[in-house]
Image (cartoon, rainbow over all chains, first blue to last red; front, side, top):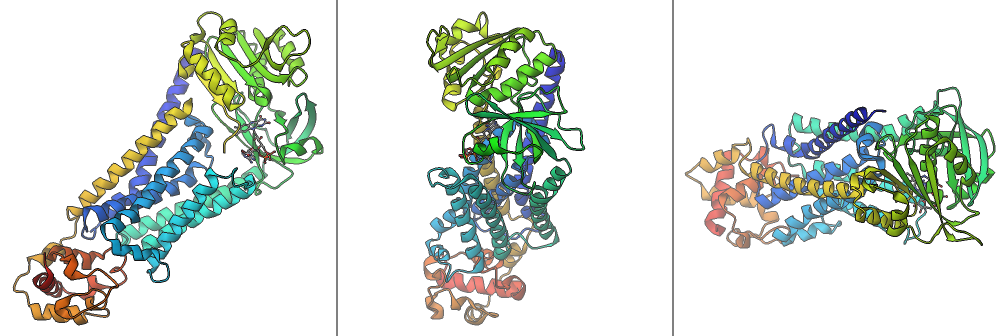
Length: 448
Length: 131
Ligand SMILES: Cc1cc2nc3c(=O)[nH]c(=O)nc-3n(C[C@H](O)[C@H](O)[C@H](O)COP(=O)(O)OP(=O)(O)OC[C@H]3O[C@@H](n4cnc5c(N)ncnc54)[C@H](O)[C@@H]3O)c2cc1C
């Protein structure tokens, strides 16, 4: 790909991103616009209407959360799914604050309204409003403290979805019951349409998408043990043309369950993007599910939802590439290296690759071979060096980077995937070496 | 990290949403399209006795059921005490027509009370408890 076409590509993504942001803001404020059209009722006081405005927007933002996590590839493409999920998490605090401010403002101004908090005596509008806020508080608490509360990922995910539906539905009933700003055919139409879109999103994620995945089954073609208690799983498409992805992207993988199940895990493709007849994932044993990889039988059905992600040398082109991997973080980077090799790319590549031990270096042998097919230098960094080791040890820091980066480190494009602490430290060091932030890309394996 | 941009986007969105809500409140207060409040307030020659009897026995659920008002010998703590609240006629009319945060909405005052009745009622409350 030539430089100019890449620039056009990223300009295209930037434009798409702006369009999505504008659409997002418009949808978020639609309830306000519609409330004010077609013979609105008299305004009460600034604070009452302000609080109502916050409540309406808060609800719309929460409804939009369903669209955000629906994994529409067009929406994710400009931002990257991890950024979208990060936004999903952070904006939920904003929505929660708005939704809390709605009753709080009213109650500060008229303390007698505190009685609406008593569900026994309150009217239905207040009861539903209260339920919605409580469900939202529970949902956020369970997400923020999931690990501390010892909630299993799958249990959390199902609960999260259920609570989210409760939040939205009770909020809609609350608005209907409060009855202000919902009179008249226009406003009814809007609220019915908003509810319908919401239901459509649910149906899409829970029904349409699984059915589409079901039509494109895969089978396990091989499961190969790797160094460092990892496995490489190869999948072959059954009766379809597979998946086209950019090297470095990832997909959600389901093995031996139906596409309707919530038991799915994200993994980066580790195979070359130039190969579509077979894709591979390199998976480290990290918990309940990943520990069972080794016992998957050949021919088992699997489903892939993807590709996702923006971590790719195809999306951040430059005159040379520097990859920094830690442990199984080599997966997406391996995909980039293999792809570059298959394309006969001659640009210089440097791989700085950290592992606990020499024996645990995933792809140690194949990386050696790749140095013949690519202009590639591999720098191994070990925690525990074996006898006679003359290579690097310890943390990847500024000095180590400076030793290997050569001239003009700012011109290279950087791709990092590994433990969060390592990526943070390397990023800081790169900034000190005057590498612009736009040249540094990450993949994080812990989404939640 | 890319998340720096995302965090900024979150902050910008939050500010936008608050600004939109405030604008919404200002536009809504500007009277919107409904002139009924204005029409009611424009009426004069109020019949304060009629207002008082509406207070005590308006359609279905009269004001006195929930709102204390010494002049009408109404005692209830279900809603705000009008002797303390001292609403202006505008506040009274807006509250009855628009409902105030839930409690009035379930009643159909908007349909059941005429402009004349609303005007008398507001004038009566203003005459005995007005601010
Ligand atoms: C974009 C991305 C790419 C990834 N690529 C790879 C890869 O190439 N190779 C690799 O070995 N690992 C990869 N991971 C990590 C991998 O998804 C988790 O290690 C795996 O899901 C753990 O599942 P478990 O049930 O074995 O572990 P558990 O013990 O159940 O969970 C360990 C932790 O993993 C996370 N996790 C668990 N289940 C899920 C799930 N369904 N979805 C998301 N996160 C989950 C949770 O934070 C959990 O606390 C990637 C993760 C992400 C987000």
